[in-house]
Image (cartoon, rainbow, N blue to C red):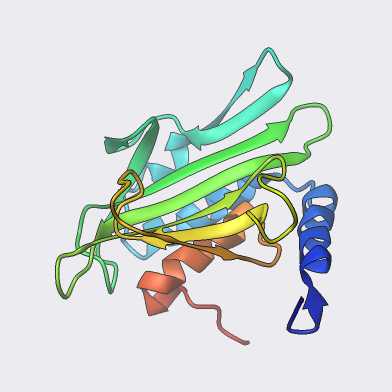
Length: 189
C-alpha cells in the first residue's frame, strides 16, 4: 500500500532517517519554542527555565519540565492560557529521551490537553516517537504518530492514532499548538 506515493516502509524509513540525522540540541530548540509561548503570553514567564535535562546511569538524557504549574500523570506539566480553541489551564507535557554519548534521539512524547473553548469537552493530542517498533509491520503502530481523543488515560473513550512524517520534538510542539491556535501555524515568508 502506498500513501501519497510513498509506501508504508518508505514512511517508516524516513522517520528512522530523521531520527538518525537529527542530532541537534533538542533542549535548546524546545526552549526557543517555549520563548515564543512566553512572548505570546500563553504561559508563565519562567517556563523556559523549567525545562531541563537529567542524565541517568544508563547513558540516557531525559529532557522534561523539572518544575511546572501542575502535575499531569508522571510528568510535570506547563499550564497554558489564551489558546484560541482551548480554555485556560490547558496543559503541555514534554518528554524527550536522548542517548548521552551520541545525542541520538531515542524517543519523545509531546502532549497537549485541556477543555475545548466552545463546548468545554475534554480534548488531547500527543505526538509520540517510540524507541522501537511496536506491533508487526510499519503500519501496525507507526514509530512516529499522534494520538488524538478526549482522554489520554481513559480506556472507554476511543482515540485515533495517526502516522506522521518526520518531526523533531520542537516541530511536534509547534504542530500541536497550531491545531488549537492559528497564531502558531507556520507562515510562509
